[in-house]
Image (cartoon, rainbow, N blue to C red; front, side):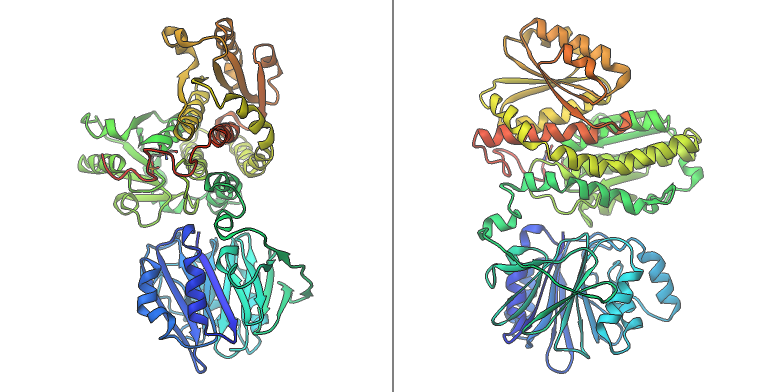
Length: 608
Ligand code: AGP
């Protein structure tokens, strides 16, 4: 996620802003910049790369004198990491500067409108449209201009804004992307998150949705987007700096699990326009979509597990044959790709060596590659023919959660888009799927609130030797990911098995008290999975079932049941994986493992 810091007061602004941005580095970024008012005009310095480059460029802020400014670290979503795409963005005359965290969903329409009004754009970003809109609406009243712009943008934003005409004030505004403001005896502050200003004040105000703040050197005023003044109650922060980076969560992994409702919504919402799914970055005509004869999904680890789900969903909804490969296998087996094949590579980091090699293998054979990637400007993003971003923000914990959930959403959207275009989904079926898709963020939120129950159950298995996860169809894909989550952070041996395959050998490992997690979210397979549960119970297993609320029958065969809300069976992975993520997390925490940085693992496996 991007980082925002603003300051107006009696001290030099640039060093304070640089210090604040440095404390937000954990959020991940690929460029940085500052705008400082020097008493006559706004000076802007920005560059791709690490914050250190900006610090060197400005001699620690000394070359940008002034007591009022805004700064930004950018996590690219629209437009690759570059100097020109870095924030702050500004109007043509350089009298207005803005920094932004979030996604302006209607920026393409707004950009067209402003271009038609004669505005010239320098960057590829969605944010720049805000600077020109502010210019268009500014007639001497900055608050009015800000309010008018906010009425016209759709999407999420946390903003810092400054006007050269009004150097005694800066503005903050927020919708969905977090933002706080604070004050001490030396001035007032804007920040994306508490760590940036904890050094200066522990008394902060959390900016509410569609709220605007006018900050002056010695006071702040809060307004609605209709310019009505409002009162705010401050919050005293009692976290230390380290805890503040995790927003009060014990680990980045838990924080990122709790970001999943937003991650899912951020990946989904910009691509659902009314009753249609619009995936502009697909760059495929209807004819090209209809001409697809097979899809090859290639990835590693959790991304591969998402791909296994993608197979079932794409084959089920679009009726396109799908083959899923581990990238490390695909790249060496001289894969047979035939005319009409579409290769889809999935990668959170966009730097996984095996997946990148697989992409190059497919391209070398003359086939188009679609990347489902989280990191803008990453190697896979740059080399894929088309990229569908997951917009999950930077994922710090080695064990993926929010990016994995976003990958699932991307695959659901593709399957629905392809299914509708190829005439495999009726309007009614499509509409029902869309309704279920839109409910997922709230349903995930509901499951996350179940964490204490999961934690209590997990504490019983801190000493476990072997844990098995079984399921059929999509439930097998869910089991793969549930098993990996447990073993990679708790170091407990775990295997996922197609439930029907267990009896062909592995069932010999089941002993008295062995935990078997049976995932059962596919109504057509409920009975089959129950029979597998009975099999393992007969051999002494303790059976945890993860199933849908309607499936009460399962209680006859399970020792412990975790229910998930109703959704379309094709989307069940997005819900059933939540308790399994929490289970793996709490077992690892109970064992005292380094949850965010598990032994032997790297966040991005850039070597073979
Ligand atoms: C999952 O929790 C692991 N971090 C790992 O399996 C990961 O999914 C795999 O290395 C692929 O990484 P990528 O998505 O960045 O390509």
